[in-house]
Length: 101
Image (cartoon, rainbow, N blue to C red; front, side):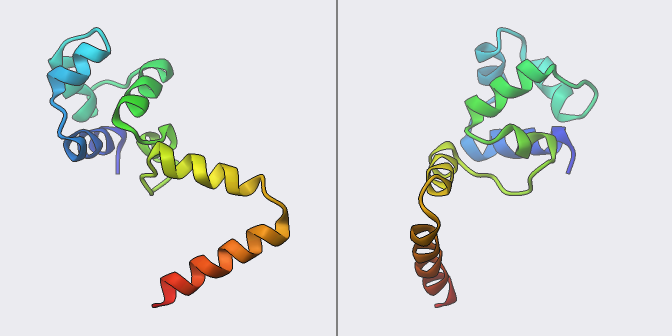
């Protein structure tokens, strides 16, 4: 998927209009439409603001990751990585047990 299609998908999933995100970015709705149609590419700063507003990762918007992780989930994953390895293994075990069912 392209940046534009990912932006459109994330925006619609959140129920946000082009005008709403444009207002947040101090621009106009048609600019967001151009991004979504891949007619224009935003600066990295604008793309990061859009990702933050839509609660998705910048990696997801630019196509470096296929999964949409909300900030809360991403934060928990990062915290998990800070735990000792033996604790991580136990948590992964319980996750695996849950997903097998």
